[in-house]
Length: 283
Image (cartoon, rainbow, N blue to C red; front, side, top):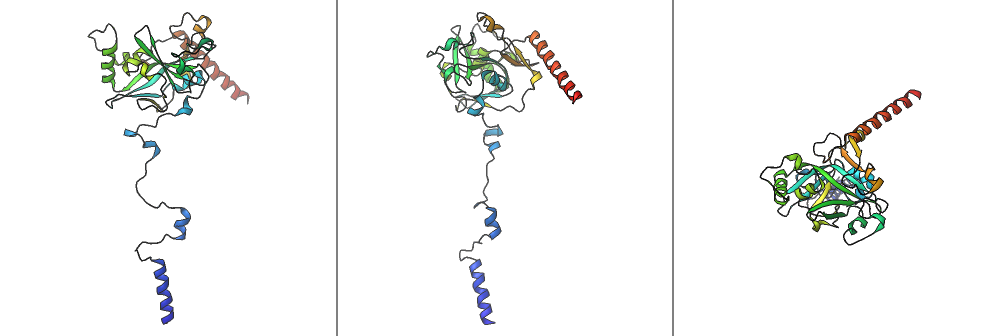
């Protein structure tokens, strides 16, 4: 009996180390339990205030038309120097297809110091000055010289800061306060409201600390996306009529509504729906 007690005592000493910690069981080792049980951070809440993570380089690596549509519903964020964040949902874009596109600044494949951002990797900003006083912001897409112009936002956050910026920067300003729908309903208004100027040219929208894109809570369905002619390119011949402007139907923040294009889009959606129904009936 004495020898048996000694063997039991030795077995207990082997299971309980002298430092008082308990060895993991074979089952625990097999499951690969973490060494510590401290708090872990979810990738879905890695940004302040639970905002979704920014969209990365892969999002921008698509054709100009595809990217122009994909932009709709996404959230553009601008962080000012004082930490204020301005947010707006993209509701209107224009696609520029590159050298073949007579309305593009890269038509004919010409590259200049001014338009270099159009030929850089997808997601690069191309910011240029128009009329000697206003800025427009584009984002490069897949394909040399192709990009997407951001035309209008639905303001979501920092509206008072946007209002102050627009009031300070717009020419011929009056004392009238701007309505919410007037803050970002145009490419130059958008840049004024977000304090975007030439210094943002050639920045990477996927990695910049002052401006980036976040995934919106929902994407508009195809019937809600209107394809219309681009605005202000009357000298581009047949390219002036191509339906390369895309906007969210019914959004009060769109810069220019095209009723004819909306009817055509609705008619096309209805015809497609009827075709799908007929296909189901014949199966």
